[in-house]
Length: 390
Image 1: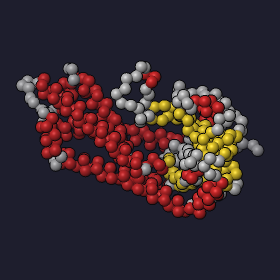
Image 2: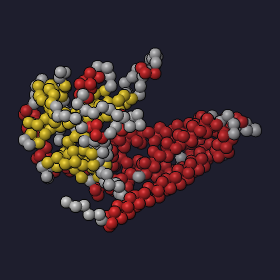
Image 3: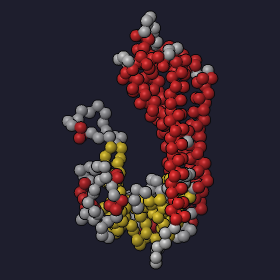
Image 4: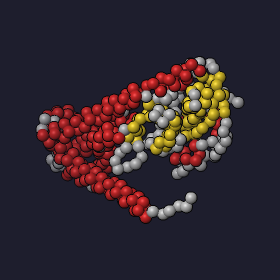
């Protein structure tokens, strides 16, 4: 079939791309103005709390030994402003999620940008672009869970609605409060140093700072922005409720299909059983380490790491549900006892060629095995799977 070039289609793509770039540029300028204006407003409000001219204190700090406090305060404020602006976009995100949400059943992640999900209406797996992609389930009793996505205008790639969950909203709020407290602390330290350096010197105790701050909360200069931020905190928390409401709606809609699949799966597996599964994909990621001992001295920097690289392998089990494969994944961490299993599976993939020296950004073609291969697994007591060494 001969390809026909369409100038109209080419111009349409260019106009759509230029519209997206214009939207990003306008949004960047608005955010930049809000960050600069917010910085000045914060200094004015903090001046009222401490009875110290914080603009003069910042200027003094840049010309004296207070430069580290000024620079650290600026860095903390920048992070705090970005987190707060991310909170302010919640109404727009929730509006888009309410208008453009879609649902399907969990399959597996094909790449870093696409997932293969089961569509109960079409009764088949379909490739769906989503960010981040939904990984396969880790247990048989959690296969075919509902996955919801939504589109954020004017962009095309659907977003995973899990990003608006209640837990994430609470964590986001706690991080904002933490950075705000750090910002106030460093500004207080800068104000104290400034008062000690001017003539005649003045005293600003921490107790006086807290009492003046509490008294100033009732002033319109502080009460109005705090009430505004509190409102957006509540809106952010409502996003978790909306995400759960949308997901519950799809759970009810797809209940018959999910229950049928689950009955067939659980009737065919039991703890301790040996089953065969086909290798279908591999993904790289990182995992944060939360359980390190505190206060332990290490011999070298290599003994202590905040994160560790992980490799997730996806397997298909063909004979559990009629004409529908069941996908499960196993995630191995880069520990010594798990490296043999990683090497056992990596033999059937192209060699790792990290982009920017980061395995997370590896070539998407490395996600698929070079040849089909089946492995033997043991079903664990929690219905997860364990690879049987060869």
